[in-house]
Image (tube, rainbow over all chains, first blue to last red; front, side):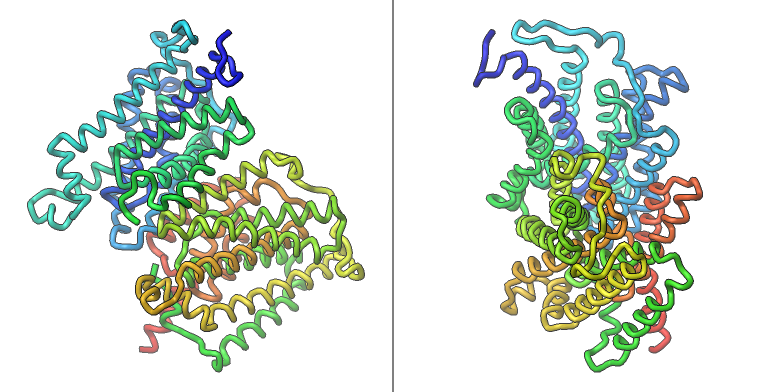
Length: 295
Length: 322
């Protein structure tokens, strides 16, 4: 059997794939965080909770309404996005003039509320959610066996990430968004409805978290704790990448997922903390983050 | 977070009788209260008062929001419990070991976190504390999910038996009051003035020639050490240390205590800890989901009462005055 550094190739590829999957979620979530932070200047602590709500909405749609995976892939992010927009309109809006830390504290409370609520009604044990028929089974790639659903998650997250990047960098709405990020007062003076833009941006960022939740539902169990477990790692990813750049958030997300996967092969005890160790090293060498603009 | 700091309105000077009266009142209350209130509840409350006051030293007076104070609280709790159980040393040395641990952790996390400001500072402290959480989850001496439990409190200085509830009560009360006086002295010292200057306007403080990073680190380490003392006392009180003490929820709780009571006020953390510990005791028996209520309280506080209870009172008093 082929080995690399004394590790069997299928094992290495398997962990790399898991790393790539985790990286997909890190990328999707840190992308949403970066989009929201760029315009609203709010660190959305509730991002992990919205990811969890996305997975739960998918599970509820299937259990209560019989709507399957493909329907959920569209409806769950919509529901999460609308929830986000309502929260932005009714509450978050009041915090814009204040220190950014209040936004962090408010969304922290929101995360506790959502997580505590789902934990109260659904417990912590986790609920199973099956992958759709079309994506079950596995494909033999010769050097490894690739479960179809995992392959789909990687492709879908890549499409979503670069689609978002293209919307922000290449379209007119994206141009408004970038302009408002630079100077919202001036953009408003040009007749762009900036408050609406803020609401839509928050909704869009939350919807990205929601769709990540649907993608995650068949891979991991649907559990109220799935959001808080991932959000802290995503924060570390964001510190490493710097929140200044959309592409930076995406690249850092995938990169760290892969590093984490490799760590599981070569030094499994440290797999949980490797992202935090990298964060510490980056802070020592390049405090602004790998792609950060601010000092 | 300069908009809500109440102490810019009322600034007790060293000569003012208010703090002396306040501390005397606190001591009197602590002597009388055990006859009416269950002492274990009071001791738990005192531990969290100290934790919140230590946290407020950093958030309220230096303007740094740490999301990782559970690491200092829980880390010290683990080491104190381990020292009592395995090393079998006297409780004062076990507590000292816990505090030293918290200080070392404070230096490590602080050096990294002060390299960034504002929300990044919060995220870095959170991430570093989570790293410590995973360390505690895997390290053999913490017994993983079971935690460290089943040890004797031992004899203070080898003489006073701390398994007697009232002995323990007076020991904890004395340490907490002394720590509060220490915090008060720090805040109203020239050093504390510089901390507040950093909070209000960091670039200007730098331009005045102060080495801001060193002051921030000093404040961070002091806050960490005092949080560690709170954690060590809690481990001594309940005779166990678990993962819950190092988890991020604990960092959230101490933020909420400070926020409810009033960020940047001396009495705020005392009131806030009282409200939150009381609320948790009530909720534990009511069947309501605790996390949900805490989250809702957080949101309401941020939206409507950013000054906190003590801050609002001071604000009202000030408005009436002039």
